[in-house]
Length: 132
Length: 338
View 1: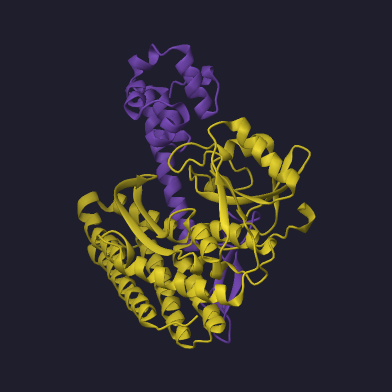
View 2: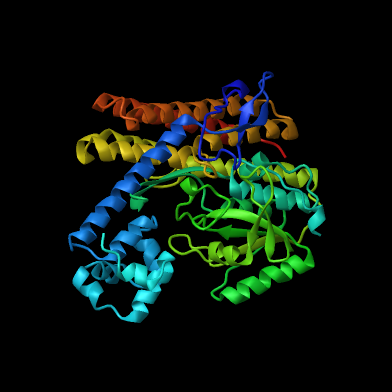
């Protein structure tokens, strides 16, 4: 990439930082330059967020319809998957999957609820009372 | 001593931590491309069946931690690494190092990193930064992807050092030891060894998923995605590839430019002009990685949706694979002297 081709598009990094890139100067030698962002990347990121928001909405609806427990919703909301949630809670993936069933969730001990609430960074009440 | 530490911005976090720490210990000649090249950082791997954020898992560089370790070893230094199961012990150790006035690298998760914009805060646990001092309750932070130094409170520091999930840092802290003067001879030898190892890694790693053949592996999958997954999911997968490739702190296409810069710098140090023309090949590969990202972008933006456009992306990857294969073959054949 040549120095004059460094993209200076808008991005979420605005006002936070610029990215360093290795580019060729007019003598054909490598140097570094700063970029504010690149539209192609911004759109990939926007797309990923659209997908996340859609998944969160679906999870909320599933809770509302009584198909899944709040654990499923907050996992999506906090961008987690089973591996990450398992890391934060110490529960196995299949245990978490069970806790995503509303009638299993209903009978979870206070202790387990505290563990989930802590992993999600919310209060036990918020977790218990989420209705979708 | 904190006031002596100088912040250097870099394209990639691990390179940057390594470069800054080595510079701090008196290696003024150290640059990000040199660390990356000597550490044999350029790689490609597409891990089948593994999903990251619901998309394919591809990586454009070698395993986290390897670049610094390999580079240090070839330069005759040791990198001391520590991980902790106890959070308090991890904190004590960090405080101790700060008291001794030794800047240290820390592996952190970015989900709770407050100075990152929310849009970038995923559960990605292989980010690296330097702690070079403390002021009151705040650690002084040199994050290599940031333009300026920043700070982290004790609470935030604990959260990011003990983020959980894949690649969980477990308080991972590291710093170079056994530091001695690196002679020109050692540097030249390190460069040659680094080049040879990187060429072997990219050309001769067994199996279809890694090295130059790994790029073709991804290409093969891209051709199938639209038929197998439907247009929407296939487009999301492409978006994921672009994010892995070009996002801040990962810089996949960018890694090719760093490697090209490394070869250019090495040509000067080894006094071997043949490296320049091979450097140009990596620049070409980097440019093509970016062109492929643009093409993928057209698809996930929804402007293009036909199988032939996916095929065009895959063709570009095949082309990149061929260029890199040829370039590394030429590198291996060079009779580099040190």
